[in-house]
Image 1 (tube, helix red, strand yellow):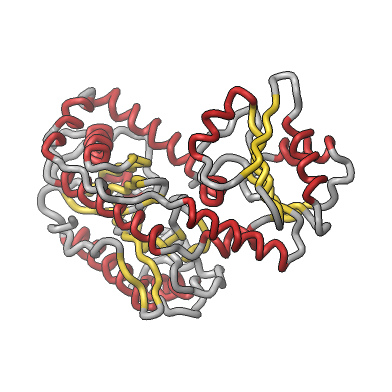
Image 2: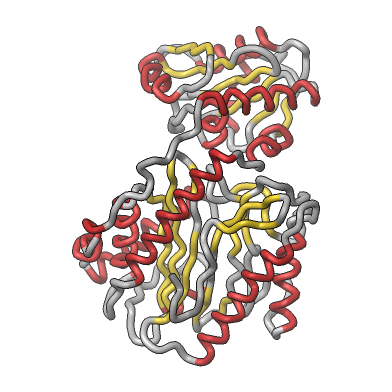
Length: 418
């Protein structure tokens, strides 16, 4: 699920729960004032590191004979330039050439705001409300199209921008996807990036621990989500999402809008994450309110074994899809459905993570990307029984030459999930 659809889903689920229970404020205030921030000494990415990223990107463009990269606001723009901005009908975009200075195009009245986060030397060109940003981008492309070559387009760039640039400059030439340029840069995390991800994971696990000890019978998903939001903020993170699945809703990986309340024997599944200076965490914990049944314990223990098997399979040079295949083979040997069917594991074993909560490569058996040091992933091989319940455990890890390293320790048991 995309970050946009995830947020929309979580907002709708929270609203449904709040209309049922109406107790969100009380839940959010419970004990949060006693939590101390965990991010006080954490340092953001320095301008020097962004400069090194640009040099690597430009070297790749020169090797592949690409003229420039076009990117609009989002994580890739922030990754290379530091600019944190939003998308709207008023186009802001950057043209990063294979050699020379980056050109940033933005509305005239937005320039001071855009410059606040700009961390690289760049030529900022503005346009007035009755002018065309596409003419500015096309002109910059004509100026910097040396050596000649295609224009690379960042994957999330909206089509109307590409189309309007083409109209503004009929001789603009061919365009190509930018994955082979952006991916090699963003997939391999630096020590500074790993430190930010560690901080984000520390915050999220502490928020989960806070909520776990305060859940009571009769609470709704919205009540629990409110606790997660409040605790995450108090601990120093920027809350990104909290998916709270109760009872039968836990059998559906991204939940249900049907209202659910905590009761004795409820499966509680929380999938949550935050960001610290733009870098993400993603942790899931599942447990039972009250006494767990033998079936619930069996499912939890199987998922825990699947999580460990994923880590045991991770080796430098192996295709990342081998991790998904190993976990899936183990589940199928235990009698669970084959080929992503239910009951069983209906989604991939994990996903890349960094500035986006979901980014390449992916732990799905068809992904042949070689596992390399510096890559970061989630490890979340859940099991789901439609109409009954599901269990998902999720922790994030990064690859080193000596093997995988967890940001957070795996859950101990269904009785001690955090």
